[in-house]
Amino acid sequence: MRDFFVALGFFTRLPVPAWVGHSDEGLRRAPLYWPLIGLLVGLIGAATTELAALRLPVSLALLLGIAATLLVTGALHEDGLADSADGFGGGWDKAQVLAIMKDSRIGSYGVLALGLALLTKFNALLEIDAAYEPPGLACALVAGHAVSRMAALWPLLALDYVRPDDPAARSAAVAARPGGPALALPLLCGLAPCLLLPGVETLIALGAVAATAFAATAYFRRRLGGYSGDCLGATQQLCELAFYLGLLCSST
Image (tube, rainbow, N blue to C red; front, top):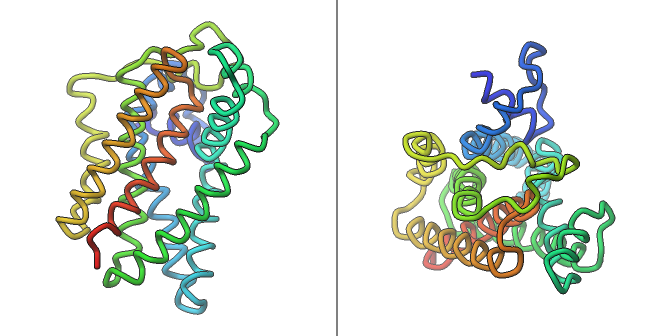
């Protein structure tokens, strides 16, 4: 239970009990709880959207739901996407890419990537609401947040961490590879919400998520020879978008 709260405090802005404290060992096991935390974030976003839709047009309700997930996570993964876009877009070699990623300022590549990602997410979810019977939108939000965090484990499992000796890297403690039976929890939490959605569309969406995670991992290997925390955040964001777009491929 303590490890879950450590992960919750690391990956979200939600309050955790004072007795949890700080634990490097807990942070090393934090990836195991990413999909479970994704479930929680997705539930918050879905609940906000559904409650707001009682009084507001669905487009505005959806904006509030997305905003709620950003507030809950502190836009942690969106920040990783923006940093990755700046680094890979502006850097020519590994050292330059990592240096740009570490810069707290956002560049043009980051602005474009973040803007396009949010616009794509909003429009895809709006289309899902139109294509699926209620509570299809809510189920898609929950499943998307959970399964994308499960997919974000793949670079961590397949690659080495590129900044193991950098004490300033926030994700340095989250560089241990989970394996074996420990993966049962993230697999269960990542895949279980998908059972709430139609079978064929969900299989297409899961295929899109897998392809995106594998492609991102191959790209990180080629450009960096490993992964950084920003790479994991970017993978989560891209896989979430892939899931929503996959749900739309045969929904009509």
